[in-house]
Amino acid sequence: MTVFMVHISHNLEETHKLIYEHYPEPDRYSLADNAFLIRDDTIAQSVATKIGLDGNSEAQGVVFRLNASYGGFDNRAIWDWLSHAENAALRR
Image (cartoon, rainbow, N blue to C red):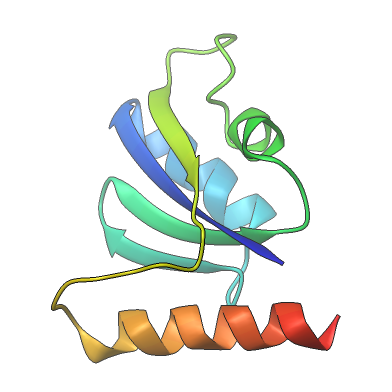
């Protein structure tokens, strides 16, 4: 599976609803109210469409495809989630 980072800049409530509907755990990880990690076997545009970031609603935000290169210092659970997502991709 591919890992995507979603940043929501407008219409958080509706976008949250769609993220939770289309990406139940463990396919999503909340970084903040407006930022999520998402796992899916698709392209960034398809993720954006599923969660309403397609120009057809008031939602605004971006979806980035991650390339398995990460850095920084944050909650250990983030790194664990990313590791699990990479291992799941290898098992496919």
